[in-house]
Image (cartoon, rainbow, N blue to C red; front, side, top):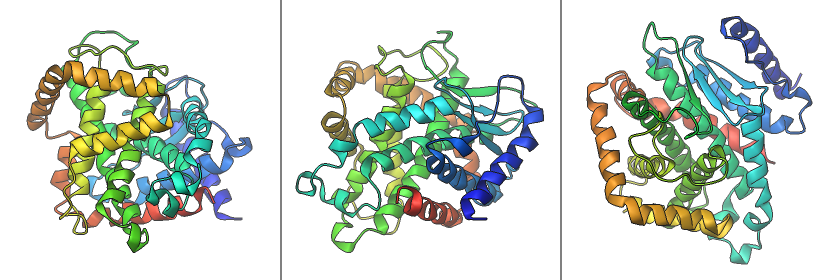
Length: 352
């Protein structure tokens, strides 16, 4: 039995353990016969190992993960069952979206940023991975937020199509789950950067890698929104607007990327990283996406900043948020070495 068979068996076993605790409507996708078997199995391998080795100090185990056999564009954290699921439809839509631009992202080396030539996988594959792991970490953040005695689900789906009533608590929790995801993605980015050849290990390269991952999150939100940028809103819905979420993710990833010994002297700024991410979106994907996002930022910046700051101020009184619980349980970054090692194991064979 090879390792892929071993983890597929773990997947089946985990589903059998959690299925009885779920309400109707969930069914594990049997990816054993999928044309994307390697993608699913490598993603599950990373998530299984991450759940079982990286979060001992937060005392959240057991947590279960499965791919839901649904074509809906949705990822869900089910607090009662301590389960996370990403729908097959969402993952395969993201695969197809990034694969659509494979030819551009794999253009001749002479026209690529230098860092692209040193990556150990195609750029479109890296962007898909980042988007998929952002979904996983975001939903794990909701599990960590779990309050004893609560029974609810948190859904990352077609945002802006549900009840437009503004729910402050939910908006704060969504931004906190984004923070948790951004922290972990930043950890992977710095680890990836630190293993590049020395000639490519500079500030500009790190900015491009962060920009690629932010662009991946942006595209993920865009796909979840039906491949359109929704009109800006503030005190509405249970999720903040995509623009506010992207601004938050940029700030969090830049802040966390600067917290490492190897990067502490870099002058990373959210503004410069935003420029990198937007250039990637503009040059690689539909320029309309870039134009709509830039127009929203330029037109509504004061209201975006004010609403963002209001939500951030609400963090202070909620010790149970994922970010606050993580800070309280960890006195240094050293426990997250396990995360980095898992990431190293994950990215090397995935698209070889």
